[in-house]
Image (cartoon, rainbow, N blue to C red; front, side, top):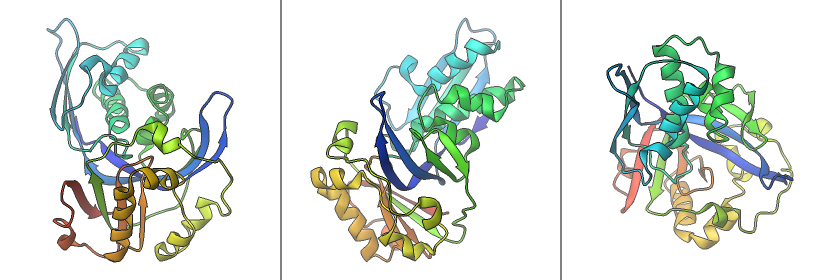
Length: 272
């Protein structure tokens, strides 16, 4: 059985407080977008153990450390099912703030649940997913949500960007987490993201912010330049997603002329 894990973007990201466990509380809106990997799970009862085959963008980790295989191992802690062979075609850039690895892990949980009729609810799958990463539970539900805590506490929101188009640009830059958090000063936003997204998209720019941009743009000005350029090309709203390095713009209409505008970058565009 095959599925197509999709990426996400962050519509705004506020770091609101520091936690005693060393993490930070944040507020953000996760929104699914159409750039996708391909994930296939096949039953291999004749095999002594699970196997993993990858293609596409090279993942710099051992198979056992891949989030997909870690998700599979967590499912085996609670459920009994025969050995499987997992194929992953990687298309979502990693280290890009798009949650590609988290999406793959969560989709394999859902796929195993479906193939073997394990009867796990979304809530049960989300409880397993959070052990793999704070944003993994989002992909269990895979719909726009307001997220808080470390990104694992969700509140449904009524938000649709249907009719708009996304342009996403991923430069050949990896932003280490420590660089993203450098200089971050947690504070409560003046206006809640839940209120901002009720306004026209063209009004978001002066109100919605990604707090990571302050430190990331200083150290990696190319990323900040991409955001400025998307606005120049007519984006109603543009922002870095997550802790970088991808930048997206929301446009009124498809812009095929942008596809070749950025050298040494991965460019994706599609309807919201």
